[in-house]
Amino acid sequence: MKKVFLSAIAVCAFGLANAQSVKFGVKAGVNIATLTGDAVADDVSMKVGFNAGGLAEIKFTDMIALQPEVLFSMQGARTVDRSNDIVGNRFEDESSVNLGYINVPVMLKIYPTKSFFLEGGPQVGFLISAKSKNDYTSNYVDGTTTVESETVDIKDNLKTLDVAFNLGLGYDFTENLFINARYSLGLTNVYDTPDFLGGLGITELDAKNGTISVNVGYKF
Image 1: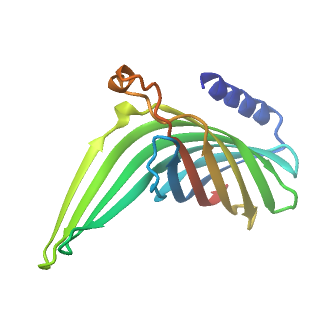
Image 2: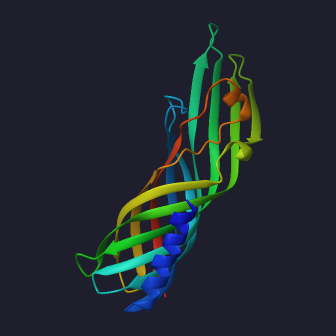
Image 3: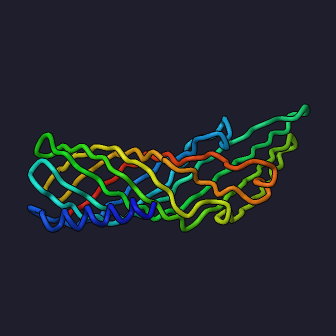
């Protein structure tokens, strides 16, 4: 992972040295994130988060550019379990895993037309926060409702580095304003298996990030 990060820095440095033009910018948008893998419940669903950060567009020609970015990104997943008892009381357990990353993607952009672009490239993510939250709601037949919440810090159980590969597309409305959509496919397991699970012979809990993001940005 360290080699991937250093290679990305070297590629960006080479790009700056050979650039036709360089623009800096900012972007922000919505994440639709989930987790996939053997350690993920079958009923897991996507959760909505956000991302925001800065970028540099390094253009080599009118058709080819390199775009390194630094983004804060909220990811994770959620599940909702609903049940009834025999007298009609209704219960809901909503669980969510909320992961905060500083992501550093390096995207190769291809412009088949003046404004439309395709993009792809690697990403390294640095975990800065991880919490598991459960909201328990009970609706009783007598009309009363109770709500209980529990939040647990799970950062110590997760790996601090995440590697992904991104694919996306976008459109430049003007020389400055653009929109893009991207899918980030996690390549590494987010879990750092606890010692007690290792003692049971379980060496790995498999779960990977998967994130769709839609952003609006502005280049200066």
